[in-house]
Amino acid sequence: RNICQMLPNLKHKGFRGLGRRIKTQMLRVLPSAALAKNSLRFLKRCTKPSRQEFQRTSLAIGVGFLIMGSIGFAVKLIHIPITSILMS
Image (cartoon, rainbow, N blue to C red):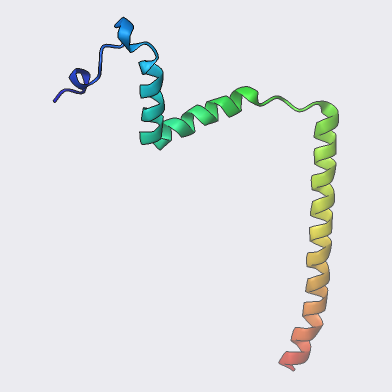
C-alpha cells in the first residue's frame, strides 16, 4: 500500500488536532526525529558567553590543568626512584 493512502486527510474539519497527535506518534517511532527536534531547541537556547563568564571559565580550566599537571609530575618524580631501586 501507498503510505499516503493510509494517512487520513488532515485538511478535513473532523481531524483537527490529529496532525499533532500523528507528529507525536512519529516522534516516538523515529528516535532520530526526536533527537533532531531536541538538538534544534538546544541550539536556539544557546547564547554566546559574556566576557566575564568566559574569563571565569578559562581561569577554572587553567587551574584544573595546573593541578592535574602537578599531580602527574609528582607521580612521575616518585615513580623514577622506585623503578631504579626495583631494576637494580
